Amino acid sequence: MSQTIGIGIMGLGTVGYGAATILQRNRDVLSIRTKCDLELVAVLEREKETAQKHLEEIGLSAGLVTDDIDAFLNTEGLDIVVEVIGGTTVAKTFIEKAIAKGKSIVTANKDLMAIHGKELLNAATEQGVDLRFEASVAGGIPIIDVLKTDLIGNHFDSIMGIVNGTTNYILTRMYHESIDFDDVLKEAQRLGYAESDPTADIGGWDAARKVAILASIAYNSRVTLDDVYVEGIDKITAEDIAAARKLGYVIKLLGIAKEDNGAIEARVHPVMIPTDHPLAAVNDTFNAVFVDGDVVGQTMFYGRGAGDLPTGSAIVGDICAVARDIVFGDLGQQGCTCYLNKAIKTQNDYVSKFFIRMQVEDSPGVLSSIAKIFGENGVSIASVVQERCKRGGAAAASLIVVTHKVQEGKFLKAKQQLESSEAVHGIDNIIRVEDEA
Image (cartoon, rainbow, N blue to C red; front, side, top):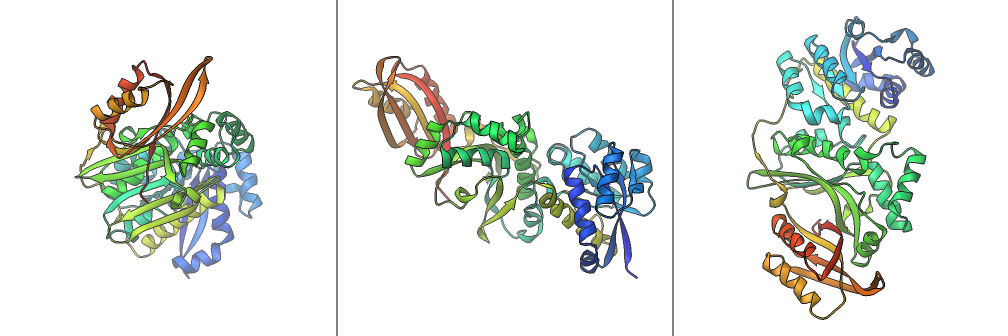
């Protein structure tokens, strides 16, 4: 008879219910693949009645549910604790308690891993248990274990990802249907793709947490949320989308991690990418992570970045990995990979091309004065598009400039001078440009 591995789920919301459903639905085949029997033995949930109904719907006993953490952790036969409560306070306390009791952990908590990942991983290693977190980034898309194991022989030149479905849905609709940002956001909220308070998504903070995790793994040095430069998509307008289309680009909110001369850059912001870039075809709520390794070359991982079953799939994958470690006596071997202490680049040190859209005086010499400001700050212009328009009844021009690659600090100095120039009525938007796939 195969060994039984007991699973406990903390939080039976959307994701927790998805994981429980998969465990129950595929129990027989999972048993064959893991050489053990995976049994759900406990559920921790404040809303006990709702959780009990959910369990009964999938053929499990309502008696598995408790709202007491000590009773949960003391459940007979509990080996693996799945944390899908979310947040960084209660979840952290409960995980620490579980580790102290010798339980291995599977979590989908990006907030917790982006802020406290290193200390939790170290605690798990000291206790001789596993802590796995594949579901914390990009839902059902396998990427964390890929970076840690499958591509371990590579140095990663860059990692770029669309890792937030809400913002990708909004930008997709804006691009294909020429709809204003505010209108698409309201629709996304109505459809359930965006929260009533969408700040974490549209402000880039959800993606930033995921970038911190990916950068830490890829470059073996701790990157926290505070190390990630963040801009959201709330300033992207229909005019920006139209201008990008004319120039052969599409706008995406990208999470980017790179290393250069031993220093890491981790950033999240809107980016114009060519329409033939692999990430340009990732639309609606889908996610994708584009990895450039020195050995494997360019690879992309694509799929559903959220949802009950996609995220539940990643959780169950981690459960199975931990179960195998239990069966074969290999727990606690894959701890924190951040054994280095690399510098973190600041915004001034980033290198990008830039798209800048501004309203300027429509008179002789204006273009040359703007070019002079760029030139004096070491910014080389790649292209210029100018269209006449009206501003307050007076003749004006909408000017679009795309630069060559430049250190961001130099570009920001030029921007500051443009803002104080009498020839420039206003800067409408600035968006970074990535031409290289």
